[in-house]
Length: 593
Image (cartoon, rainbow, N blue to C red; front, side, top):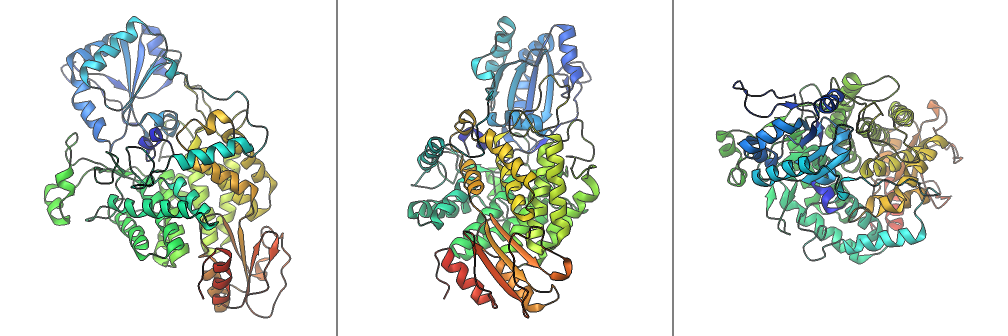
């Protein structure tokens, strides 16, 4: 993930209500992002300024208290601009378009939607006033403001050999082998890079194994010792200058990464770390109705650093108050949490987390469903639907199918994929962040979503055997494999993972036996714990009919058995959990004997 990408790694999305001017008539008249706002700008001969912020963001609070209260800034905006303010948590289309700019992001437009200038982070009052006047004097778009998208997609659903080699080298060059993380000033656990390193480590790459272990262990410094949960990142090139916001994308990603680490090295501290995040989710981001909240603010008092506050123990913190929790319940964030909890259960067998994942999925089905298998973002959306919500829930459903072998979840994953295919397909390739509308700034494909979707539908293809999902994966990969996309950021380990998975079958374990049979259940509990995400775990109870993808002809045996299939070969029947564990250990280069 690129350096600029991280500022928006965790970025959740949402529009804030339009803010009117103060009673005295002073101040900036903020509006929502609407087509009517662009029409107003055209009618009145104005430009538009978009303040794209996050409700948990410290520097967004500072900019509101300083820059947007400055008399000269207020005067210039009032004379020449239509002012738009959006909390990126509720608008995935805008957030994904500008997330590389971090929060706050400030974007200037002409009334026809042309981007003039884009700026990342806090802008002090005097520089902002100069920028506002400079755009009035010369509204020519900056070169950096023009988004470059490929006009032609890659020919096939894979990286070219040359581009693959270049991306592998970029991955290796991006790693900080001294203190862990990426070789940039911001330190955080970049999930795709760690997952890719673990894949290489499984094949015997000791350097990748060492870097992944260093990074995972170093990232433990980002865990809140009082409440649990993971802070967003650290600055200054180390792990001790923490920014204290806690957002769902980080919590869910860290749970999955710590589970991967525990399965790889068997170190109890990694499982403990995942549990601490789960405890935080239950205490602070868990909604009573079954969904999940979005984030918790970095500041106790907005705009004031809270380092001393977060150094306190629980009781001392609570005496001063609790930082604001954004209580929006978005389908996307709930799906992220459900997938992470399902992944934790898969590895640990702790049924409380499976039950919580199922409850979250049921809440989303009951409160955020759209006809045709999709999901809306919030209870009511001002735009959309957005790709991220249905993608997140589809991945959660597939995870729950693997965890439970309940075919309802596989059917829901299928429907989610079909909704995506019907609503978000972009040309010439890839998947747009939102359904197209008549907005002057149309939705575009976004790298992270396309990586996640490509991997999801490719694995769904292996579970179902339905070629439609493989074609969807190829459609996404053709966009990701375009050189201008694949090389647009610091590192793209996620594209390398997608490319590998397109070329390989997942590890495939099948248990045969009645679901009422304790021996079959024990075998499935063991099979479910196989290392990694890219795997196909199935339970064939012949009373349910054929498997969804009956591509292997298994014998019907008089007792419960498991089969492990790799490289187009299947093992002899395995009748005990130890036999399954021992075979997997040999396949993964471990010794469990």
